[in-house]
Image (cartoon, rainbow, N blue to C red):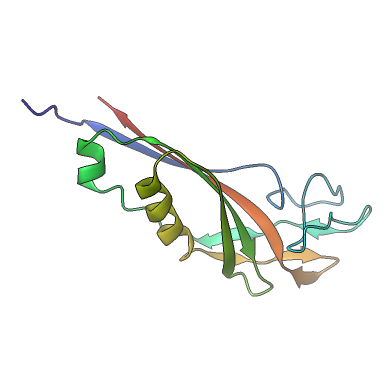
Length: 132
């Protein structure tokens, strides 16, 4: 007998690392798109998500109890577009693919360094889990 799935939890958790920080003057661990750190004393504002598309956690994945986490490092350009993506962690290839498909569609208010838009690295964590 097929078990009923009563709740699906999908969480987007931006990681506080490599370009995903609150605004302010402290450079922290944040990085520009070329990998260089934010200069000490610089006025830095993090990139902010404007439009977020959630992954399509398809029924066949849920029925097979495929769960896990996907962590991506994306490059956000000066216009707020995702221009590059690297998989940092992927518990299942199908989950990686649907997460990448969704994140490619995200748009951002670009990060700013001393008032000017700059390209940055931004980490995204996607968790897929089933709760009965």
